[in-house]
Length: 284
Ligand SMILES: [Zn+2]
Image 1 (cartoon, rainbow, N blue to C red):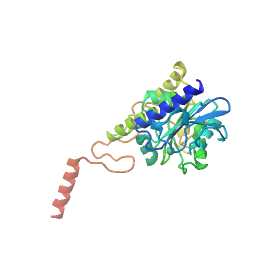
Image 2: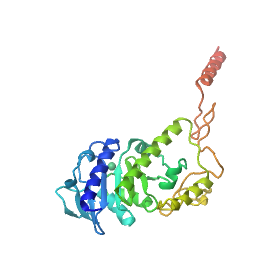
Image 3: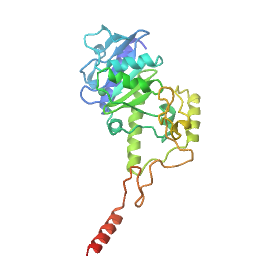
Image 4: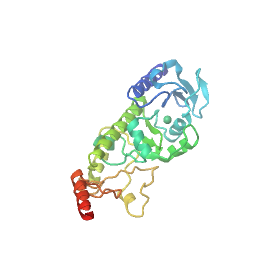
């Protein structure tokens, strides 16, 4: 892509992020590699829905501004860290899509083997520890996962994706938000049925067939063994929750007074009424 095309594509990605409600006001930032030593980056304090190609800032890989009338994004350090850790990454997108960000705020990673497309393209979507936006803590939090993941949630903040080009990074942001939406609905309906470990392994095998470059393999099942670090080593493999047997529910069935994972007892309205009536009878 020429520099002109890259600038135009950043504008288009920004427009889509804003139109889909993934950013509000001046949130979010987008960058791309211009060549081996230069980056093109969205400027600070601009709504991503209303950018023009001339607004972009050119920096080197240390964040030094080389060209542009404006200052680079306040989250530039996070982008620079991605490019340092991932020579294969040619574009980075950061936004606050509301449902995925809701999971990030609730501290719930998107790491369950639920959808074939997600297992194939992203694997798992972990949560990088909370760090104050625009400080150097944020790149440090991202570093832990970025070598093995193309997308992650940022605790109490938003989401980050990277890709071989701008649209690939943008589509991963769409996939994360779509996955978060489906996960939320499934949980409201009583919890996901997980894909089996065998199916996850099969899907991993398909990655090569469809030419999907995966950042890292799924961590071996031993990583989930008692006493093992439940995260495996997040810098070289991905943790995906997938049971050994088919169709197991990770979350207990919420039917008829079942005890949920959090120890909460769930009753139907009728069961609750019956309990109250019984209690009232006893008092009398
Ligand atoms: Zn942000």
